[in-house]
Image (cartoon, rainbow, N blue to C red; front, side, top):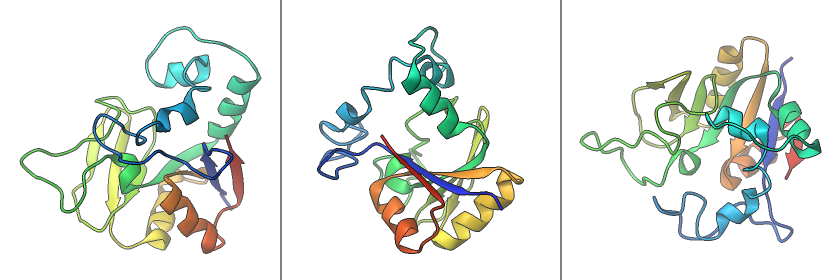
Length: 171
C-alpha cells in the first residue's frame, strides 16, 4: 500500500512556522529561517523553475523525500493566508504562482468549499470532508505512488494523532 510521508521543517523547540502569517510572511514572521537550508539546493531550485544551485547531501535527501510521490495533502494555511470563506471576487491561488512546484494533485484541507484550481502541472482540490477524505482522495489520485503530507503543523498533528503517518522526516 502507498505510504503517507510527512516531511516538515521544525525548530529544535518545536515550531514549524513563525507567528502572524500574512501575504508578506507566508511562513509567519521569521518562519523562512527554518527553510534557509533548502533554497540554495539545485533539487529545490529546479522544482521552482530556477537554474543552478548546490549539489550536496542535503539535495540528495530532498530528492529522496520527494521521489515516488503522486499526490500531496496540505492544510489551508499552507495554501495561503486567507481565512474564512473564499473571496470569489479576489480568489487566492496559492503562494506558488502559475507553476506550483508539486507536479501532481494537491488536496487542501479546508472548512470552506471551493472548485478545484488547475494550474500548470498541479491541480489543487479543496477538501471539506476532513483528513480521512483527503487521504482517500489523495491515495486514489496518486495511482499507487506515495502521498506527501506537506503540513502545516496543525495538519501534521491531525494525521499523527490518527496514526496515519507511515514515514516522517524532520528538517
